[in-house]
Image 1 (tube, rainbow, N blue to C red):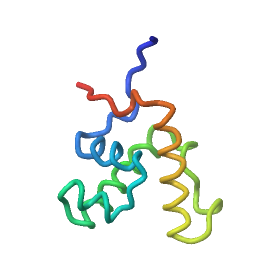
Image 2 (image 1 turned 30 degrees about the horizontal axis):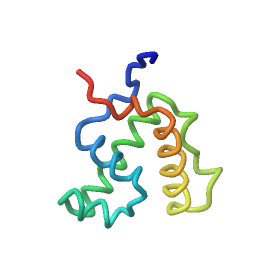
Image 3 (image 1 turned 135 degrees about the horizontal axis):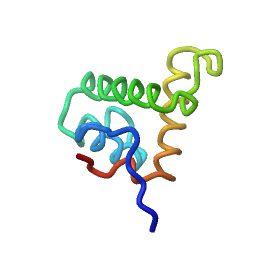
Length: 95
């Protein structure tokens, strides 16, 4: 195996959310399974998207590629989760 350092350096709460999201849960399901409010899930997603946009802006779609706020959010999530399925090192704890 080739070691790859996580480049996004997600926080523990973000990693927890992403691990659950990879199982296909909706945001409401994520809130219940993580024992947090729905607003907390949305804030974590915002933080995750911000971090990804800073490190790898080409990974997430811009507003011209999708229709409306919901479409943009759905496409962002789809692309990010697809990437993470191929780069599980991003969900590894880091220092």
